[in-house]
Image (cartoon, rainbow, N blue to C red; front, side, top):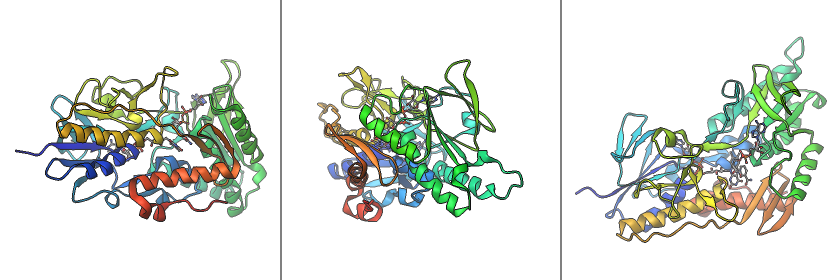
Length: 406
Ligand code: FAD
Ligand code: NAD
């Protein structure tokens, strides 16, 4: 008789936490564990803004999946998940292979949400993965490098627009604000000709976050040259820039060679293709993290949706939650395998939020305490190092960790 097979989709925070915990909880005689990921590496999604701005090399942001899993216990398959045939309990892969499962853990993450805004897919850049981050970095560098080559100078090459002032937009602006002066020195460009513009539809930056901390973040970024257009929505991306407006009447085009869309996410498209009931690609899950429709399918990380009953709104898609869900999922899958159907419920243990403003600055609300500047920045690096530690132990922290604290 075939051993039960557990298939985990995605080697992101949720998937890797599941696998690295599961491999310790079950033996090879009890079940087969298969991990599927598009690349042979894991990337720290939470560091992609740094790779995009070019303040951290993309190789620092990734590591080999096989280096952190127990290869005697887990079969790693590098392939793309195309679809999930839920009734047949099969995963269809890009290679054409079909993978049967007895238990499935879906941890495929998110993609940028574009809300149907025209031109974004064609003309804007988005932070999705290593490839898109590397492309953004290269594109900005090329725009600066070619500026002085033109007889008639095109200042839009030196204008970068970031759409969205959520945590991703703000963290990206922090990095770009540090990177632009470096690029000016490297390519003999007058810094005064550069522009870094943030367009945010809501009436404030980081909507809903602590106002005092937001004020600090805005002041720090403005000091480094960032222009904020608040209460202003991106309406369209064009070949020459971006059309923004406060309402129907006040519409203008900002000429820019680099428009980066960083205004929210939706669940992985595989979720919709597979026909799971979803809200913007996210599946509402039971307290034990299983799909409501299937007893054998767990959905975790950014592709899942759980309501925070205190505020009657979904928990935000974060790495903090994805990792905790991975830990619990490993426990629950192991329980099911051992015939125990009394599964544990997920309660997020939210420690706080830290938002970087470049390498040397940050804001944070941690255990209810407000943090600014270097102390927040130190905390942010600790959080980043902790994520490495949780998956790969001290060896991985030593290899990839952040140790420059001032
Ligand atoms: P991911 O970590 O994104 O992993 C998904 C995995 O699935 C990837 O390895 C991907 O390659 C793989 N995959 C996707 N599609 C397929 C497919 N079809 N076939 C095979 N493999 C596939 N959250 C925080 O808590 N703190 C932060 O500081 C923070 N900073 C952030 C900064 C940025 C710039 C961004 C973009 C997000 C940040 N977040 C942060 C949010 C956080 O990154 C996500 O919530 C987290 O990555 C979700 O984890 P996940 O495992 O669901 O998805
Ligand atoms: P978000 O949804 O948190 O923010 C998106 C922002 O874009 C919002 O402020 C929204 O008003 C704005 N926006 C939407 N449409 C717009 C338009 N047409 N024009 C201009 N602005 C528009 O999304 P995000 O920042 O991508 O973050 C995604 C998730 O990742 C969130 O859950 C976030 O908490 C998490 N994250 C956390 C950190 C951190 O903890 N340091 C960092 C990055 C991301």
